[in-house]
Amino acid sequence: MTLDAVGLEVMGHAFASVAEEMGLVLIHSAVSPNIRERRDCSAALFDAAGEMIAQAAHIPVHLGALHESVAAVRALA
Image (tube, rainbow, N blue to C red):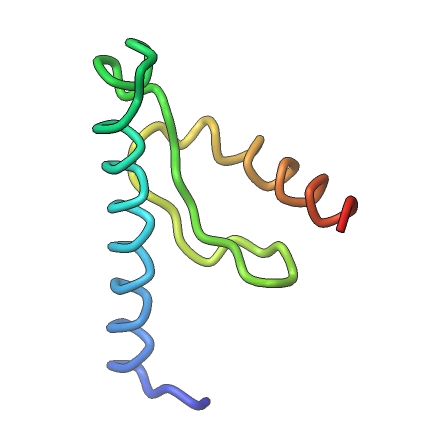
């Protein structure tokens, strides 16, 4: 699939919205006060190769660990 600049921007925002929604679902369904009240979490989308394609704007410090976690899970598969 080839995207022009507008299509690329639309897809980028769509993926970012999915990641943001993932984070909100995590926050609303969490039992832990750290996640539920402090929103101490992050969410991101990865492709099949383990590359991050979108992230939510919650707490970005976790995103470095997410990449390593995805790599570890992929190594088990």
